[in-house]
Length: 116
Image 1 (cartoon, rainbow, N blue to C red):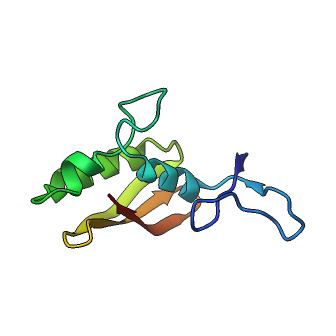
Image 2 (spheres, rainbow, N blue to C red):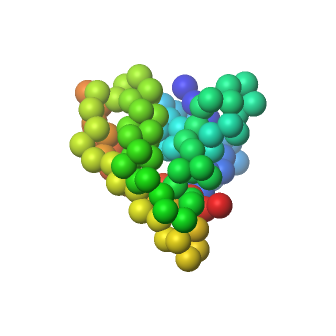
């Protein structure tokens, strides 16, 4: 069981004011995709190279999408990935990552928006 997060990444709280517990493969993937490389103090190699590879002037989106695939596949329940795309708005320095991941029980279609 994990502590569930809401759409903004904050703790999900029930109407009664309790923290909500659950098991969500989608949440596991989203957490991994929101980590900037070097951000996690116990393992600096975890995370995605947003600042070095995507949120730059001429991003190598193919390489970044490959890194996204690797992060998604590290979630134990994921059995396949149908799609990954990363788009950058150079003016606002915002990235949008879309993916479709497959597990034995569900197909997860989500997107993550990141900014520098």
